[in-house]
Length: 130
Image 1 (cartoon, rainbow, N blue to C red):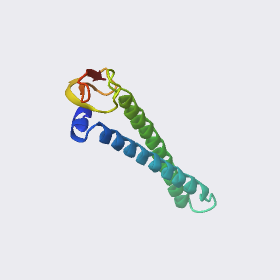
Image 2 (cartoon, one colour):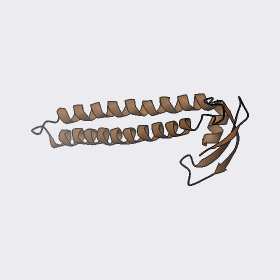
Image 3 (cartoon, rainbow, N blue to C red):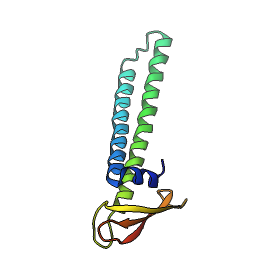
Image 4 (cartoon, rainbow, N blue to C red):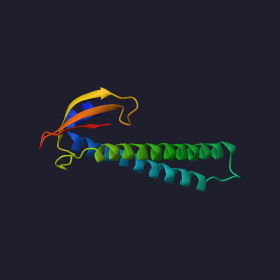
Protein backbone atom coordinates (compact mmCIF):
# COMPACT_ATOMS: atom_id res chain seq x y z
CA UNK A 1 0.00 0.00 0.00
CA UNK A 2 1.31 3.44 -0.88
CA UNK A 3 2.24 5.87 1.86
CA UNK A 4 -0.53 8.37 1.07
CA UNK A 5 -3.20 5.65 0.99
CA UNK A 6 -2.01 4.19 4.29
CA UNK A 7 -1.98 7.57 6.03
CA UNK A 8 -5.38 8.53 4.64
CA UNK A 9 -6.86 5.20 5.68
CA UNK A 10 -5.41 4.90 9.17
CA UNK A 11 -4.15 8.36 10.06
CA UNK A 12 -0.51 9.20 10.60
CA UNK A 13 -0.22 8.09 14.22
CA UNK A 14 -1.69 4.65 13.55
CA UNK A 15 0.44 4.28 10.41
CA UNK A 16 3.56 5.16 12.39
CA UNK A 17 2.61 2.83 15.23
CA UNK A 18 2.00 0.01 12.77
CA UNK A 19 5.38 0.61 11.12
CA UNK A 20 7.10 0.37 14.50
CA UNK A 21 5.24 -2.83 15.42
CA UNK A 22 6.11 -4.43 12.09
CA UNK A 23 9.75 -3.36 12.30
CA UNK A 24 10.11 -4.77 15.79
CA UNK A 25 8.46 -8.01 14.69
CA UNK A 26 11.31 -8.33 12.18
CA UNK A 27 13.77 -7.66 15.00
CA UNK A 28 12.30 -10.45 17.14
CA UNK A 29 12.28 -12.78 14.12
CA UNK A 30 15.94 -11.99 13.52
CA UNK A 31 16.86 -12.71 17.13
CA UNK A 32 15.00 -16.02 17.05
CA UNK A 33 16.76 -16.92 13.79
CA UNK A 34 20.10 -16.05 15.39
CA UNK A 35 19.32 -18.37 18.30
CA UNK A 36 18.27 -21.09 15.84
CA UNK A 37 21.54 -20.68 13.97
CA UNK A 38 23.61 -20.82 17.16
CA UNK A 39 21.84 -23.95 18.39
CA UNK A 40 22.21 -25.70 15.03
CA UNK A 41 25.91 -24.91 14.85
CA UNK A 42 26.44 -25.92 18.47
CA UNK A 43 24.97 -29.41 18.09
CA UNK A 44 26.83 -30.28 14.89
CA UNK A 45 28.76 -33.46 15.49
CA UNK A 46 31.51 -33.96 12.97
CA UNK A 47 31.80 -37.68 13.66
CA UNK A 48 28.12 -38.39 13.10
CA UNK A 49 26.53 -39.04 9.73
CA UNK A 50 27.18 -36.76 6.79
CA UNK A 51 23.42 -36.27 6.27
CA UNK A 52 22.96 -35.02 9.84
CA UNK A 53 25.97 -32.73 9.48
CA UNK A 54 24.60 -31.25 6.24
CA UNK A 55 21.10 -30.86 7.68
CA UNK A 56 22.35 -28.93 10.71
CA UNK A 57 24.69 -26.87 8.54
CA UNK A 58 21.75 -26.01 6.26
CA UNK A 59 19.59 -25.05 9.25
CA UNK A 60 22.42 -22.88 10.56
CA UNK A 61 22.88 -21.19 7.20
CA UNK A 62 19.13 -20.60 6.86
CA UNK A 63 19.05 -19.10 10.35
CA UNK A 64 21.96 -16.81 9.50
CA UNK A 65 20.39 -15.69 6.23
CA UNK A 66 17.04 -15.07 7.96
CA UNK A 67 18.80 -13.10 10.69
CA UNK A 68 20.59 -10.86 8.16
CA UNK A 69 17.39 -10.34 6.16
CA UNK A 70 15.36 -9.51 9.28
CA UNK A 71 18.01 -7.08 10.57
CA UNK A 72 18.18 -5.24 7.24
CA UNK A 73 14.38 -5.06 7.03
CA UNK A 74 14.14 -3.83 10.64
CA UNK A 75 16.66 -1.04 10.11
CA UNK A 76 15.12 0.00 6.79
CA UNK A 77 11.58 0.15 8.15
CA UNK A 78 12.63 1.97 11.31
CA UNK A 79 14.69 4.54 9.40
CA UNK A 80 11.83 5.13 6.94
CA UNK A 81 9.27 5.61 9.72
CA UNK A 82 11.57 8.01 11.57
CA UNK A 83 12.32 9.94 8.38
CA UNK A 84 8.62 10.52 7.73
CA UNK A 85 7.93 11.24 11.42
CA UNK A 86 10.53 14.01 11.45
CA UNK A 87 8.54 15.80 8.75
CA UNK A 88 5.17 15.32 10.44
CA UNK A 89 5.51 18.50 12.50
CA UNK A 90 3.70 21.59 11.27
CA UNK A 91 6.31 24.29 10.55
CA UNK A 92 3.90 27.05 11.59
CA UNK A 93 2.36 25.89 14.88
CA UNK A 94 4.70 22.96 15.78
CA UNK A 95 1.81 20.48 16.20
CA UNK A 96 2.88 16.87 15.64
CA UNK A 97 0.97 14.46 13.38
CA UNK A 98 -2.22 16.48 12.99
CA UNK A 99 -2.43 16.83 9.26
CA UNK A 100 -4.60 15.80 6.34
CA UNK A 101 -3.14 14.57 3.07
CA UNK A 102 -4.32 16.88 0.27
CA UNK A 103 -2.60 15.12 -2.61
CA UNK A 104 0.25 12.80 -3.43
CA UNK A 105 2.55 13.21 -6.42
CA UNK A 106 4.94 10.52 -7.62
CA UNK A 107 8.50 11.58 -6.85
CA UNK A 108 10.97 8.80 -7.69
CA UNK A 109 13.88 10.83 -6.31
CA UNK A 110 12.20 11.03 -2.90
CA UNK A 111 12.85 8.55 -0.10
CA UNK A 112 9.13 7.95 0.31
CA UNK A 113 8.56 7.45 -3.42
CA UNK A 114 5.99 10.22 -3.46
CA UNK A 115 5.62 13.80 -2.30
CA UNK A 116 2.73 14.31 0.07
CA UNK A 117 1.17 17.75 0.14
CA UNK A 118 -0.36 18.02 3.59
CA UNK A 119 -2.41 20.58 5.51
CA UNK A 120 -2.29 21.15 9.25
CA UNK A 121 -5.62 20.50 10.94
CA UNK A 122 -4.81 22.95 13.73
CA UNK A 123 -3.76 26.07 11.81
CA UNK A 124 -4.32 25.25 8.12
CA UNK A 125 -0.66 25.66 7.11
CA UNK A 126 0.43 23.60 4.09
CA UNK A 127 3.77 21.83 3.60
CA UNK A 128 5.22 18.87 1.79
CA UNK A 129 6.49 15.55 3.11
CA UNK A 130 9.03 13.98 0.76
